[in-house]
Length: 112
Length: 113
View 1 (cartoon, rainbow over the protein chains, first blue to last red):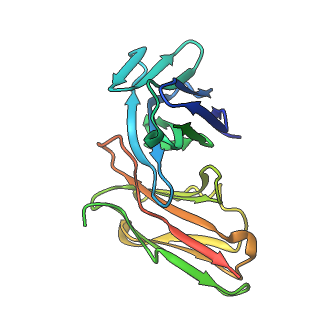
View 2: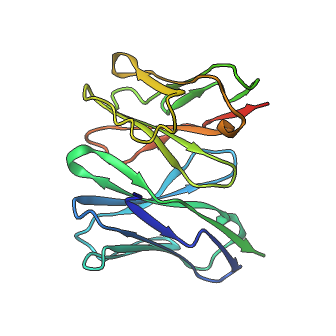
């Protein structure tokens, strides 16, 4: 059973548009929710992360929105650029076990 | 080096042969993960090591797959009698008890011909 469910599987956005990727989880023991960005031929790298005590975190054009009651979180990429084209993974960490669970990934293509 | 190192970066092997993939985690990181990523697909969890605890092997797809972690550091993923469907990128990641970030290596691209 997948602990973190991610959607959509792929996304096409025009340059300047907003990219939105969603994730949902069930385990209330999760205490840390990072997003990873992966370019072709590279390993995933941490992009931005949030803890459940805040509802939103913004870093430049990237924003995480977190809804604790709904057990959902999402990544918003404002003013999307072709250079943002990559695969994005959400994840959740269970503090007691220091173990990460990853979503299935979203392949984002930003059209120029 | 400062990051997670995986070797080899590319491996081509004949169907039926055994292969060993190596991961050198960041020094001091107690947790180590192996994932498999098929072409254009998401991350498939394989195995998780945490300190001296018994590893979580729940993601290993068959008994042809095994992994060990020696001395709480270097890990080796072994695939016996490789099949064409084993072709994928195998990613290793590590994290510490303190730092909440999981760091990934560049991966090993395995091609079974």
